[in-house]
Length: 172
Image 1 (cartoon, rainbow, N blue to C red):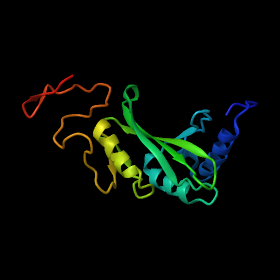
Image 2 (cartoon, one colour; image 1 turned 120 degrees about the vertical axis):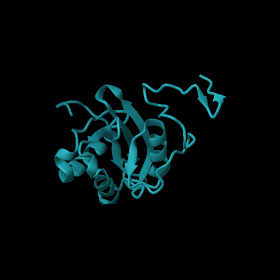
Image 3 (spheres, rainbow, N blue to C red; image 1 turned 90 degrees about the vertical axis):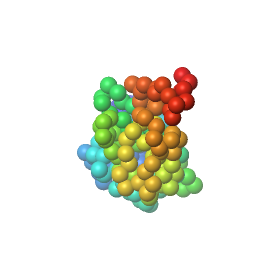
Image 4 (tube, rainbow, N blue to C red; image 1 turned 90 degrees about the horizontal axis):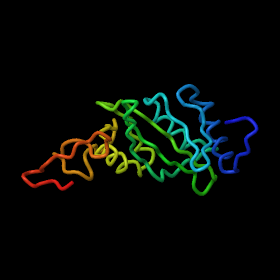
């Protein structure tokens, strides 16, 4: 964070939580971004995401017990897709963080954290269904919104809507 910048109590609590995580995982994480709306960091070593998630959930000074949201994102210019997870410590602490995890746009995968936060189960399936990234280790990795034989991933920025599905015109 910028030196001398005044930050809110909420961002200060999130920065303190990030410092604990960073002390354990160092270069596997980006720098902390003290965004006032939702402070965040990025997991740079994607393979460590489940270990980082467990650490965030189980560390006695962190207790990030609640994944409020997991959203897919298409970083088309970077040739990547990814997720943004909004994670909070409910009931014990007041800190919250968004965690970004990215993978290759074509054939990329992100390790599942459905075993860490059960909310991730359906959210990961939705991200797969809409953006195409696989979640390795997911207990039920299949489409959740589109039919199993749907072509493509509808929320990719370059998605082309198919003209028909089983002989039915697809409106667009």
